[in-house]
Image (tube, rainbow, N blue to C red):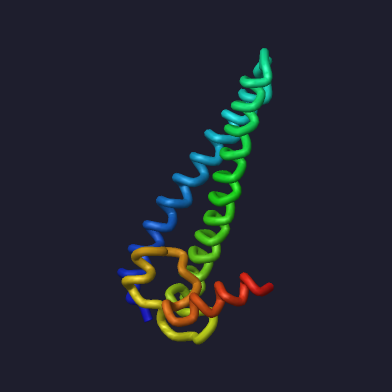
Length: 120
């Protein structure tokens, strides 16, 4: 189990990342609104704008997904279940949590879960 100090450390890291993502999403959303208001003069402008919009939408989708993972991790911290593998119930381990603060699975269970996601 993680100590209170370790839980607080990860809570701070998760909250910092959460705020950064929320800022990024707000900024990207306002940029997309501005782009929709532009008058595009030729097919090249339209193609460039469409590509930029598709890339921004993909990035926003990834960030929204990460945000939900962060919110789940923060919820687990408040419940005292953060840092415990959802599959085997063993501690996830500090090195893994340091790399991926919102990790839900230990290093042994992660490949099993990902393999099953690909099948499903």
